[in-house]
Every structure is written in structure tokens, then in C-alpha cells.
Amino acid sequence: MKKHSQIILLLVLTTQLLSAQSVESLKIKKYTQKNANEIITEFSEFLRLPNVASDPLSLRKNADFIMSMMNRKGIKNVQLLHGETKNSTPAVYGEVLVPGAKQTLIFYAHYDGQPVNPAQWDQNLSPFTPKLYTAAIDKNGTNIPFPVDGKYNNEWRIYARGASDDKAGVDAIINAYDAINKSGLKPTYNIKFFFEGEEEEGSTHLDEILQKNAPLLQSDLWVICDGPVHQSGKKQIYFGVRGDANIDLTVYASKRPLHSGHYGNWAPNPAMMLAQLLASMKDNDGRVTIKGFYDDVIPLSPSEKAALLEVPSVDEQMKTELGMGSPEMKGKSLSESINLPSLNINGMQSGNVGKMASNQIPTTATAVLDLRLVLGNEWERQQQKVINHIREQGYFVTSNEPTDEERNLHPKIIKINANENGINAQRTSMDLPIIKKVIAAVKATTNDQVVLQPTMGGSLPLYLFEKYLKGNTVSVPIANHDNNQHAENENIRLQNLFDGIETMGSIMLIK
Image 1 (cartoon, rainbow, N blue to C red):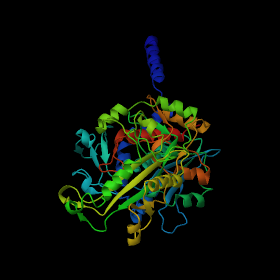
Image 2 (image 1 turned 90 degrees about the vertical axis):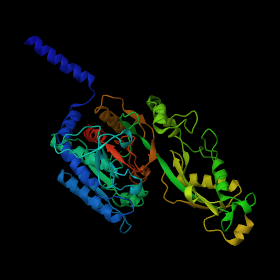
Image 3 (image 1 turned 45 degrees about the vertical axis):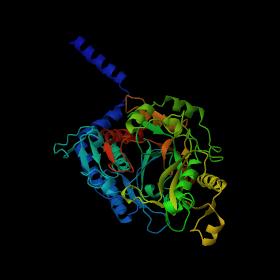
Image 4 (image 1 turned 120 degrees about the horizontal axis):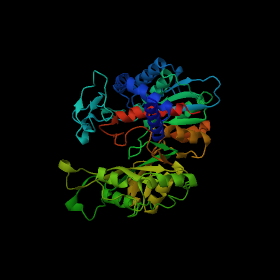
């Protein structure tokens, strides 16, 4: 009997040594497994609410649903936070104030979503009718009913708009606190909740909300739950985000469409002009050739450079997965590339193609440029660099439709609309004590490596928290990397949702 007990003790100790997961994390996991059916049922109900960012009435229903969730799960002082602009979409706020706590964490996610085109979704899917699949649709996943016995396979996926971006973040944060509360665990930090409703619209009124409610929103750290985990499937932490700015371009030629036989070789073709202009902005190695494009980039710190060296390489995996022969930026890995400013063509249009194609010289050609920024870039200055480059190519730049006089005076005419809702990049030092606690908390939820990335590839308005609240931020994403966010067939893998609850819960329990 004594020998048997020693063997059991040895097995327990060995298991503890092999597992990096904390006792608290395992308690949250147990709660999540036990209550999986309730969590998924509530999440599915949430996904049934249309949340397109341009529809304020639907967004208000989402906000009401979130408030109801928070109230049911014991979160206090639940309310809507408005900006100064009338009828702007509110943020949803709540809090759990811990007696004796001297520090505060605020957890952020957004509840609005991208537009949808149902015709582009799989024929068996409707964007706001969540459906359960055994795997990703493009990996031969099949539709199955939600189980009546509440037993879920972690590889199953829920398909719906907002499933990953970012209702999964909202759901994980709220259920993380519920799991802590009902598992008898006690936070030592005050915990606040902030769910934005305009992120996909460029966070148009977030600055107003932050300024108006600054005393309520003071904290030691904002924890951002948005975006995907690493392509390897490992959990990851981002310490910054890229900024973003857009530019709309329209090149003009003849006032009316022309027969390509009668006028080809004589009348300028705006599609060709635009193609040549855009080609002048990048070299064959993917580097932007616009003067000063990289000049104001703030280099990575020694800690950030060291972290980047530890990021697992997924370049070959993603090239195979995406059917790509080689990356655009030669000699740079994916992780290195997203730590540089970029220039992307979101779309181009001129004339007709396919069955509607005709032998004509079109009158205009348009393109939308997307500029991603890193720390040091200022979004208006970055836009101006592009405009200056266009002028250097011989273009007359206007912000209006060209007049007949302007057409006769200038052989190259372009209308430029520099979008006024740009955002700057933001980055938090990896060496802050509270950041190190978050890293340890995430590591306590997994036996795998936690990937530390200086900058997220996407953009969030995190510089506003720094600007108006002097707040530090850290991003801890949870969605699967192949979640199709912003596109058709958006989905969330159940393991990622459940892992997200554990991760958020572990951060809420930092000491």
C-alpha cells in the first residue's frame, strides 16, 4: 500500500512538472467544460443579432444583449458610455471592484462587425444564422446540428458573421469572469469591461467616449482581445498594433468612352496610366519606393528584436496554405514584414471585364490604397508622402471632378481623397512589470510556447488609449488564424473560444 501511494505521488509530481498550467487555469478549464452547452447556446443567440457597423439600430440590440449577459454574470455598474456626438453608437461598460485592490485591468473587445454579402457565403450558410460544422468547410467539414446532449468536439466550428471578429472576444471576456466567480477564485486587481461598437467603422467616436469618461476608465493596463492566434496554433501576445490610413485615387482621361480601334495608340488609357503609377510605388523586392516612406520608423528595442527571433516560422506553411509561390517582400519573414510600414492596393476598377467586356478605352480608373503604419509614422504625414510621389510623376492633383479648363491644361489628372479617419500605430514596452505578469498568466494556460510579437499585423485604435488616458495596452487574441474575418464564411473553432475563456480568466487573476 505504501509503495502504491508513492507511485501515485510520483505520478502527480511528474504531471505537475510536465504541465505549465496553473491550478487556477485548470479550474477555469473545468468550469468551461462543464458549462460548454450553456456557453455555446448563449454565444449562438448573440451571433443571431446582425451587427453590421453601419446599422445603429441593430448595434443597439447587440449592446442590450451584452448588458444582459454582464448583469446575469454578476458584473456591476453595467451601463452605456456615449460620446458627445448625438446618436453615436455607445460602448458597453461594467466593473468588478475588488476590496483593497490598488491596480486595475480593463478588458476590451468590440461588438460591431464588417458588412456582409450573403451571396458570397457558402450556399449552406447565412451570415446571421450560426451553423455548426465538424471542421473548416474548405477542409471537408460538414454541417451538423447543435448537440442536444451538450457534448462538443473542440475541432468543430461555428460559422457566422462576428463569430471570430469580435463577438468571440466579448464572449470570452464575460465568461472568463463568470468562470472565476463561480469557481470560487478571487481577483486581486479591479476588473473593468469596455466593449466598443464602432471599431469596424474606424472608432469614429471613441476619442469622445474616452475623454468624456476618463475618470471611470483609468487603469494600469488595457487588455485587448481581438484578432487571431499565431498561424502555428500557439497562443500569442502582441505589444502593439499597426496604424492605418486610406487613399482613394481616380485617374481621368477622355470625357467619354472611346472605340479602341479608332482611338487606340492615340487617346490615353486611364487604366494603363493608373497601373503605371501604382507600379512606380514599389520595386521588384516589395519595398515601397516613395521618398521618405520608411524614414520615421522607430526601430524595435533589444527586447522586441529578441522576441522576434523566437517567433516560429510559418512562412512555408502559409505559402502552401494560400497557394503562393513566394512572398512579396523578398528576404523578409512574415513577422519581419508586419513590423514595417506597408502600401497595399485594396482594389482597382476601370471599364468592364468578363462577359461585360467591350473594345473600349475607359474614361477613368480608380484604386483604393491602404497604408499600414508602424511606430513613428504619423498617418496624415504618410498620406502626404504618397500624394507628393504622385505629383512627382507629373500628375495634376485635385480633390474634385476636373473642369474642362483643367483637362485642357494638364495631360495627367488625378482626384485624390485622403481619408480623414486614419489612426496611428501604438506599441507598449515588453519590459513593464505588469506586462511581464500578463505574459506569465498566458503561459500558465498552456504547455506550448507563447509567441511574443512586437506588433500585430492589423490595426486597432490603441493610440487613443495612450493619447487620452495615458493607458498602456497589450493584445491577447484568441481566434483561429483561418477564421475568415472580414470575409465570407467567418468562423470560430470551439477550442479557440474555450481557450480564450481560460486565457482571459488567467489574466484577470494576475497578482
